[in-house]
Image 1 (cartoon, helix red, strand yellow):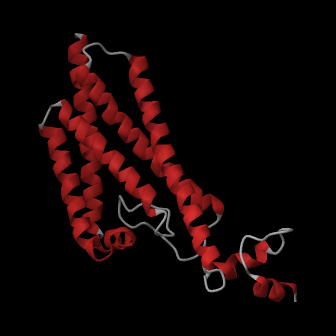
Image 2 (tube, one colour):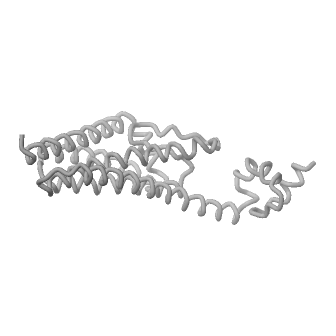
Image 3 (cartoon, one colour):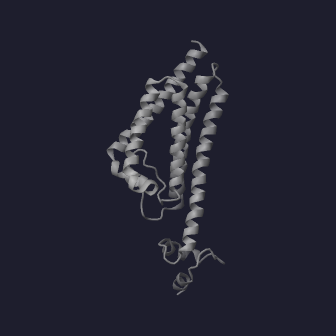
Length: 221
């Protein structure tokens, strides 16, 4: 079997794998439209339902394109969609408290303040998953454009995709922390998070992050 034939078979496998992922994701979204609407609401507000239908249609169309269009353009389209989804997930941190995605149904968000591990681990797992999928799309692009299979180049593409996804999500988390800290500082006395964190802050010597003198007196008493 020639190198070109192997590359074609691998490209086919990449396309079908990505198509299966997008079809399953769309199917779960169809089963729980209310969950998808609630997930999109912080970003799109009243248009969240319409955007949700658009996301489902886009995933189904992309799956069909990957299956029936054996072209490098299909790989680039899948790569662009995956990067867009990862960026949207990272942007949502700044406008919502939840950290779980709703790609396969319910996001499982809670109004309670989660422990640090539960707040950080899900985003990193989502970034890893999206990085792997982006890596698969990148591999299909390389296989379609380079006649000779170079395992080192393919492995480097996958690793770079994973690291890029982790960077996008990590930046999203960092920016959201800064924005929410500013919000807390501007409205410290009324914000509900004060009641949760005030008892912890007063134990930190010299803590002056928020104006919570009233809370400190209550705790000391």
